[in-house]
Image (cartoon, rainbow, N blue to C red; front, side, top):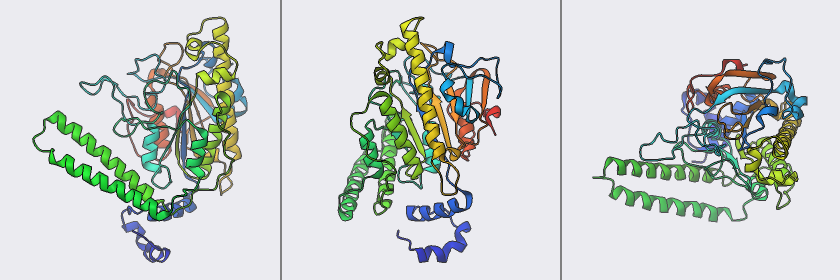
Length: 426
């Protein structure tokens, strides 16, 4: 449905009494009005490092908590942002049982055996909860970034898992990400509209055929068919969103096209730049990044593999692990610098409205307790500038639940959460 500006203005007096209309054009108008009244929108960024950290030198002293603590050797590059980060100890995902799966259940807290007859099940990830609530008014509900080397992360196509616990695809080529965000589609509007109509026609035919076999199925087959129908509904939702944005030009790129073939540290830096650009242009409000392992070490001239570095012992491997940790902290500090330097229309910084989470489901070697966790940014109204040591095996999803609620999302549960972390609430 097309709504002219005149029609919107004529009906603006009855906005409160009306339900939210499905027209994305109307949603964009409503969002624009809300933004002008309440300020910039909240955003989130989740970044996972796969294999974990060097436990002897990454975690701060557990006897130093609150704001009066010393940054560890591994976190020392974050010193200039100490008042704007919080380091959390004591969290884990209670169902985690794979020592090389650093991100599969990191944002979901799911029990992989929760579905009878399956040895691998998952649930919705925290970033997709954000996408459901804050992504309806942006061109991309969420953006998933990968690296060309994903050792230590475990199964999945990115950090993101949808409402059915199915993996969401990610992009590992910065050049492709740039064009997805900022390059205009050269295909004429009429042809793009026709392409969407053709896809809808195919969906209608598929649904019609599936409904013919719907009756008389066993319960298991009925559940499979319902899952299939849900997949079709998800595709229809994406098509509707694509259609609503067909005639809306993409944002002007605030950076140049990346060089092709970047790996390791340079790859992470350009992905960070693209993340900031995506948030700055409000192209999305939910971002995840499954960061590289092997290629990062190679860019640092480290000879042992990322797997062997994660199984360190005193000597070359441990020094490589410590170097990896400090490099991660340097890169995180760089991202925070860029978020702070990027200004919103009201004069505040992008950092003031973006929640940043950095960590892994693996703490060190094969240990799955005390997940390394660093939080930053003002997007979730968290209490920053502190070191928290929570009760052992506190669900990591308690942290994600606290973030979700801090972003204004009304939910009382996420994954295996048992409640919010009150010490994190601002």
